Image 1 (tube, rainbow, N blue to C red):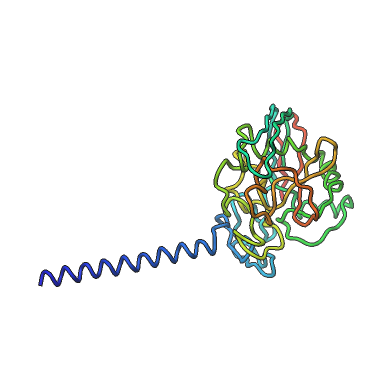
Image 2 (cartoon, rainbow, N blue to C red):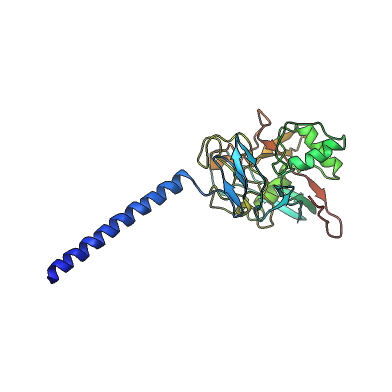
Length: 295
């Protein structure tokens, strides 16, 4: 009788272990198929993160948002990144690749970074629409208020920043904000390129498939710099000014699939198209605090 009880106990244990193994494998497979990419307050669609209460339809977030990520605010039922600026500099910035990889700058550079305010988020559709309404900017294709504006040529982006008493950053200023004095590999640090930290690999994997447009600004708060500058890695590549005054882009976009496209030390990429290129403005920093307007 005792032997039968032992056999039954062992059988039950083996059965539970088998079920547990299948559960673990199933969870691993589901995690592989649907990698975590949306912050708390957002819900995952097939390719996008939308506000709680919304659903993704035909690549857009539809419905009324009731909750957003910690980096966003509700604006007429939509999730829009908060209008914030971050103080950086003054500093002497030394840039050099920490290891050899394809697409990494090999020559060390140094630059003086003046005291600046930096847009915490890429310029949004909402901000651009206000400029259009004021008769200062050309109308572009539609987009959600909280998405970064895209398809803006270099000269038009530069003009927008000038209208807001700012300018586009130089290459080294942008790299300083993205990499910091430690020369971080990514905006947040040296490791951890995962879907929850950066909007990348949304068109052909690894984070999603079929994306045709960027995420809402502030959808990846875990990927911000220590100073709380968001979306420098992925979402939209960003315009910078090179030493000769021409424009180029850095940072990679939602289409990027390889780490080399997203690193802060990656080579300058001149875009062939503008549908995954955006920008943010840098501003001279004077004494006193900058007051954020209401979105």
